Image (cartoon, rainbow, N blue to C red):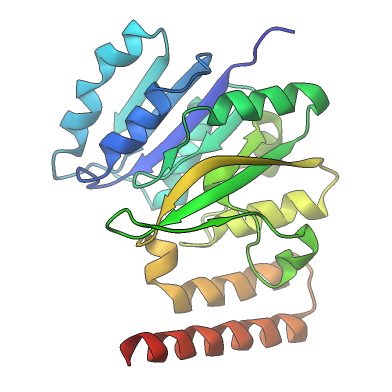
Length: 253
């Protein structure tokens, strides 16, 4: 079977301090049939010049490299722009302060070819802002998705067909639209496959980890929108909110 084209998308804004690691993690993949798409939100720092500086590197490795820089309506609007440009059979989304393991896409493709799932995902490392490893995490049962996001967006790959059918990420949510999309996949007639491989590295400090209260409330709205019992969702929301406040108090003392 011909090796499928894999599209990787990064949405960024003023990411000069971290985006090199993200770009190089795609550039140095052992799997080469890749197109890499960067959607920059009209950065005012050196992000765009860094993006430009890698054009020849990708050309020399025969990896398709596309980028645009223009104002957007938030991260999910930017990602949707990337999805519209993507030509790959399978799409991965990696943040501008996150990065892939070197063999990540090769492992994803190897497993994808066997079963052709609609959604395939793996494990993830979590790092502190100063790049100290905090933990290695594995996705939990999809049955727990009603409580919280138990799959990891940076280590997830979704087919272009599914993105087209679900019309990408909803712009109704600023932080948790990935939770909304994955719930739709789980509740829909789509196949999901997990592989026990380390795929991505996530650096804390992004919007989902700094605006916790808003993220928890958005998750509550998303559960209701996807047909879950609203009172059960309220229970999970207040439980998570209380846990978050206790953790904050403990860290302050």
